[in-house]
Each structure stands twice: as structure tokens, then as C-alpha cells.
Length: 383
Image (cartoon, helix red, strand yellow):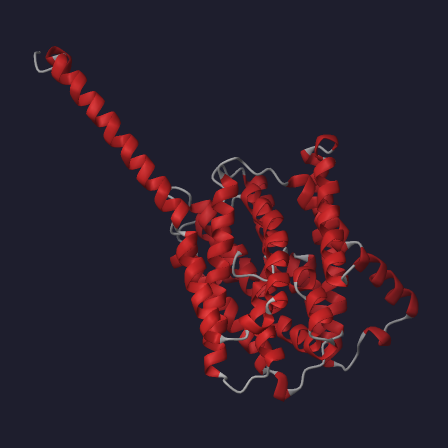
């Protein structure tokens, strides 16, 4: 069996195991699993990844391009991706803005890059992921905390300096950010994983192994996709993919001398599934809101879990398709056409829903009008 397909089936099988455990795991137990992921497993993964980074000035273009893509998708998520939601669904809109611009190439993209493009392309993809990490770990966390403080700040007259101080303290208290700071300090002194004592290296590596199965089990156990939400999430993911194809085509037009391998890298890397890190930030905000007694949450956590659950299989199927028809997808005009088609198609379900609602409203209005004409006294014109 193809290694990439085998890897995908393994990940999906673990999610399926989590689905089977849903009835045996209470919500309180899920909070414990989430705490282990956010406070132990994920920081270990980030620490190891940081200490393996070796940047060269000539290769800085890759993390810069990845960060630029994240920022463009953040703007798109506000003005295009969430436009089909109603005005009173602000928590879902904020959730979309956190999740859809983020990327998790380690789970959904890197295994396929190794198989189809080789180790050299994987190294470049890992380098590009540095920019994605800066966006997902730092910028999105600051955005989440900004929304939280903006909505829940009790003292409306608090100064900007006090808000920044509160944000800085919140950043420092997160295990993920503490690990990033320690890792950057070690890198600044020229240290890496091999510089640490052997027993400490082994401990961190063991904790790192917990990450992938725990996250996938958590997604399977926590996912609760409502009947009306699956279509919405699928259309959002399709719109995200369509816009990403368009952006990849633009990058290819800007850099026409790219090799086929680099073009494929530009195409598949941004199609990675949504990252777990923004969910970590949203969960931190949700925990603070619970302690504050906040009734109107900043984010829709259940909606976020459902997006994560759908995003991984969606992205892996899409990436396998791209590599299977690589000659087609290295053509920028083909990318532009597919992106435009998928983006337009993603709006069709919402348009159909609006048309149906409009027809139902007209029918109800007509029925009410006919009833009023047959019963003039019911209109209440007489006092």
C-alpha cells in the first residue's frame, strides 16, 4: 500500500476510534484530555520543532511567503469565508477567522510531500512552517485575547497600557508560549536538542509522541456535527480551498521560473488542514470566560471541533488528488480556473437556502393575506 495513503488511513482510524468512545467519555473527561494536549503534548512538539530550526538568510522567503498567505487568508476569512453566516452568529464568525487561515502541515501535508516530492521539498516546507507557526502561535493568540478583553473588560475606562499589560501576562502564562520563549533563548545561545541531557531529550521525545494520537482521539470524542452544520462546514472548507488555489496561482504567476516541484509545494502546503493551535487559544479564552461567568462566549468551541474533524480528511483527500494529477495542477491557469469554480460553487448551498426561505416567507405572507381578507374583523380595525 502507498505510504501516504497508509498514513492517512491510520489518522482517520484513530479519529474513528475516538468516535466509538464518545458514549463512554463524559464532557468533564474531555476537558482533562484537552488539558494534557495543551499543557504537555503540544508544548513538547513545539519545543522539539523550535530546536531543530536552522535558518539561512537566502531561505527566509519561504516563512515570509507562508506568513503572508496566513495574513491574506485572515482577511479573506472576514470578508469572504464568513459572509454566508447570519449577523447574530458572531461567535462562529470569530471561530472561522481563527481556524480557516491556519495550517497544520505536519498531519495533513508533510507525509505526502515526503512520498511525492522527497526530503529536499520537505525541508523547504518545514522552513515555510516557521512563518505559519509565528502566525498560529503568536498572532492568532494575540487576536483571540484582543477579542476577549474587548468583550469582557469590566473597566471600560481602562487605559491601553493596562490592556497591553494584561495581554502580556496572559501570553506568558500559557505553557505553549513559555516553551517558545525557552526554545528561542536556547537557540540564541547556539543550543539544540543534542545539547540537552540525554534523559531530558528522551522525556521530551516521549511526550511529543503523545501529540498526534491524543489530538485525533480528542477530535473523534468531541465532535458533534449537527445535521445543518455539516453542509455549512463543507462549503466553508471548499471556499477556503478555492481561494487558496487562486492565491497559489498568483504566486506562480509572480515567480514564473519555479520548478514543477516548487509549484506543487506552493499548491499543496496552503491546502493543509486547519491547525489545532487556534483551537488551543480559543479553549484558553473559553476557560477564562467560564471562570468570569461570561454567558455570551467569544468563540463557538463545538463548531471549532467540528471544523477540525472535517478539515483533516478534506485536506488529505484534496492533497492526494493534487499529487495524483500533478501535471494539471502545475499549470497556473488551471489553478486559477479550479479556484474560481470551487469558490463560486461553495456559495451555491447558501444561495439555495436563501431562495427557499424567501419562497417560504412569500407563501406565509400570501396565506396570512388571504386569511385577513376573509376575516376582516381579525385585522383589529375596530376598537
